[in-house]
Length: 172
Image (cartoon, rainbow, N blue to C red; front, side, top):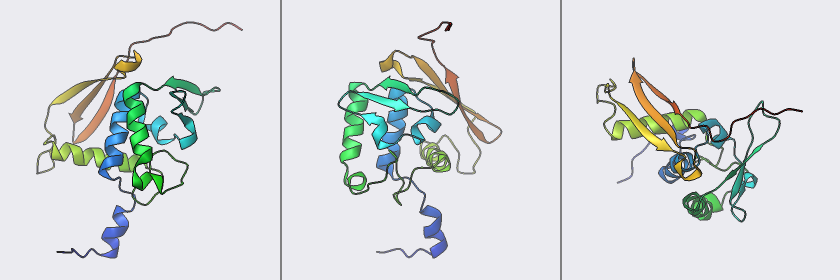
């Protein structure tokens, strides 16, 4: 049975992220340890699967960072880029929403919120459970970051700690 949706309902979903893209996005974050904002700014040309590296550009940094891509992330990205929905779209952004436009930060937030609801991290009445969760991130790159998800005053807080891999002072 087909379900009719109003124009306003359809326009609200235009920026939505399909489940395959969101899964890829989450696993990509987990496997690389980069920030959400950095991942959202990546373009197809920033990913070099032949060399197994990605170029991360961040405002305020003069030089872009070259980050190695591990075997699991390589397979994940290769499958995502081969997917029919991604293959037929020539947009430069790496992660695209269902309209073929770059995924927005708000779309990531809303999708993450839906996952929390599905996983019963948020009760039906909208009140967050008072638990917190910690996950390891970036271990395959030797970054050993810890990402924490905490619920406070009806807001989801994402944060964490990382182990410094390189430390020093640059003298010119």
